[in-house]
Length: 297
Image (cartoon, rainbow, N blue to C red; front, side):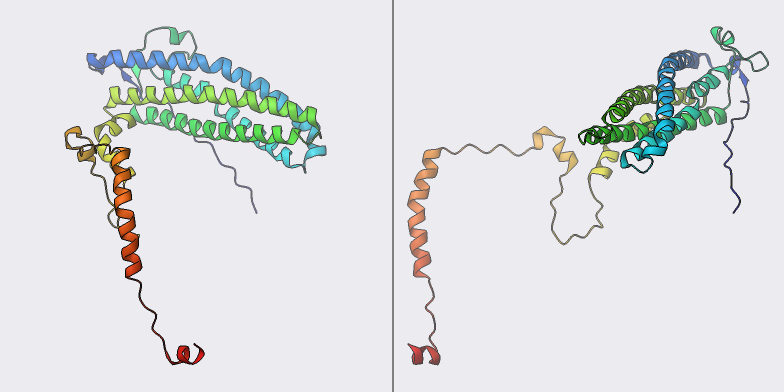
């Protein structure tokens, strides 16, 4: 069976337009978004550098212990950590954000960090910005999943240490998993901020509403649709629904019940318990005797 190699989709060069074609009122929003993108790109570099150092240590441990521990259960966690780490390294997160920043400058000039120090003169087409948004969103999903698996690997290593076998190796692996989980938590914050920034760019350039704006347009309807089941459900049990409009109005709340003193409850119980018991005894039905009862007494 032939091996099919998946080709990674590459972004084409953006179709640029001149900055002068934009209305003046959107320029401050674009300036703020590009400034935030620059901050996110700079924050990624030291974090990814630390991550690459941890990955090198993980590679060395993997190659040294793969022949000996390949059948061990804890080694499956090591292989999973290494697989996720390599996939994260292939994303080139800084290149994604830098390509977005460079798309606001003249593509005919030499692409360098010196060019980014000047003022932006162009802006890319909507398709290119949407492509960057898709790349950042996919990277965020991968990093979130990786953070979850790293936490599971750390717990697995700490439990395996209690057996006493290969304690030094397991302690080193637990330390790597802990440091990588901390790094991925920082990456999640940066990528979430980058998503909001790209949404703001789309909204400023092309009037594309962000996901936050779509949720804010109808917050009550969205909350009710997720909180309450549909009317077509049939569980066989009557369910009392709570009206959100009534619950939101404090004037329509029922009055609070007045507390009943302990003395009044005690008096009522003494006066009513005995007659109720006597009445139940009086209403006891007499057992009907049949012919067999007459024979055996």
